[in-house]
Image (tube, rainbow, N blue to C red; front, side, top):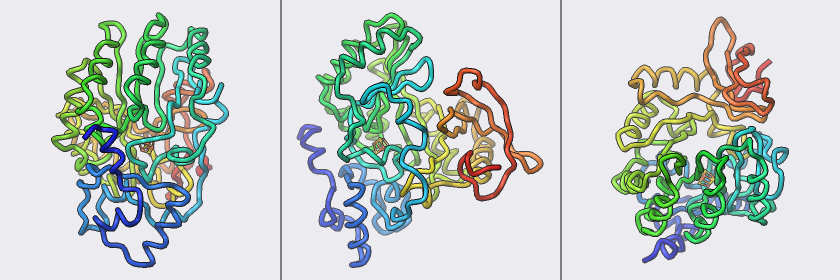
Length: 366
Ligand code: SF4
């Protein structure tokens, strides 16, 4: 079976889901309603990681819709992606980085996705005219890297990925190219079954211009022989693999789990890059977001269990105004620092807000 054929076997309906987990009649009806708003699609591989006897299984929470998605607290565009869009599928928020939304498809639709507004749904936001995007990047010499993301660009055919690299690699002002992809975690066979993809990535990596894959492992259970093999295959193709974990209630919001995850990632050759505060996304925030004070405590407790190498990540809130590092709590205040900012002058700015115990986002603090 090819990887494309395997993807067609994804679990996308209630009937398929019931082959794996029990649902009450009420649950079934509620899930049906949720899936009309945000589709479900789970690879058979990722489904096999779920303990079907545990309704609180962390893998299940990330993959299977829940009634909690009826909550509409939050918004769909939490980082101001619309206002940074230069043309369909091309965003330019930070001076050095251009971002391409290559597709609205993914191997799996994660229930906590911050682009829930577009994954698996009709959208005007993904790339339409690739050549226009290439021209934009070619004329903006301040851009030194491109992040190709989505959706998940690795669900695109390999020849389409080749076109991205063919056009972008020759630009001398680009120092590296990144792919944002969760397939090493949710569908490792996409990488393991396509030698052409691995060759393509290797051929587009030079000593002075590297290809990076930024992936998203959120729980130690996701580190399996298959996902470790996928990471290994990427590394052997000269790709550097970084990880951004999303801090998620019921999944990894305890220091032991978070520390175990970061340690194991380093073990398989993945570099800890960010731990993201879960964004206040509609149908996500109410059940996945951890309050900031709590998130800070969890991250700091986890760090106590980690060596320096495994705690290179920053705990970050990816806000409309920039990437804000959550650096400390003292005397009733929470302290932040702009790691990256939309306004150039804000980069590095250090500031504080009065702490409360419910805020999950900057805008909820006085
Ligand atoms: S793979 Fe990434 S873009 Fe796709 S649903 Fe999951 S988190 Fe969202």
